[in-house]
Image 1 (cartoon, each protein chain N blue to C red):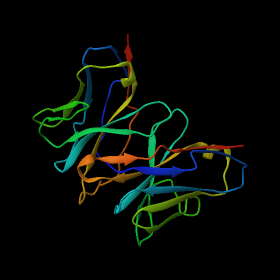
Image 2 (cartoon, helix red, strand yellow; image 1 turned 135 degrees about the vertical axis):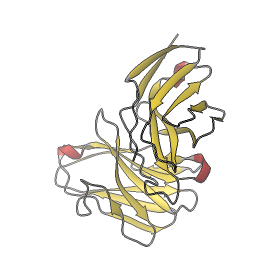
Image 3 (cartoon, rainbow over the protein chains, first blue to last red; image 1 turned 30 degrees about the vertical axis):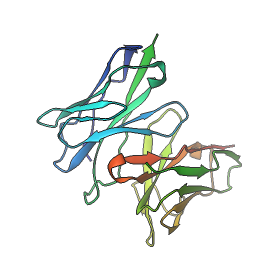
Length: 114
Length: 113
């Protein structure tokens, strides 16, 4: 699996956009970029994923660079409840050799403060 | 996305005993995944469970220690055998839900004393 690099921690003011970067320079052509978050003592929560186009859903936006070597997760209006560990993961969908094998790094601890 | 029920949510067990963790999904899924999260650490994949075949274990995990059953498309169990304090972790199951990514259960918090 391709490895990812994320900052250890980030701060964000409530109501502002939180931009979480991720480097995945060894990503393969069939690997998607997934973002999950884990709030203390809970299972990881799926946020968003994409292959090469930018994606947006009700939770966040995902911006993937044209060369696919990095991406940014954007929480447009962060709230205190967005405080969590955010994981950027690359993995293939069904049919790919890394299918299902989500390799979790240490993630980014995002702290949203009032 | 799928709803996963995981039981028990937590347990305290004596060393040398075994604990079986259940994972029930509200719809049929081809593959189920079991993860371990040691205290203060990230998640590590233990094994992948397909219905009708033996589970596939990741490096560092063996069937004798973590036997897995997958009797049908909505259910799986993970057993932590002959437990020691080093097995104290959160154990989570996960399923693939097509375009909704992977859904995780709420986890089983295991403490071995």
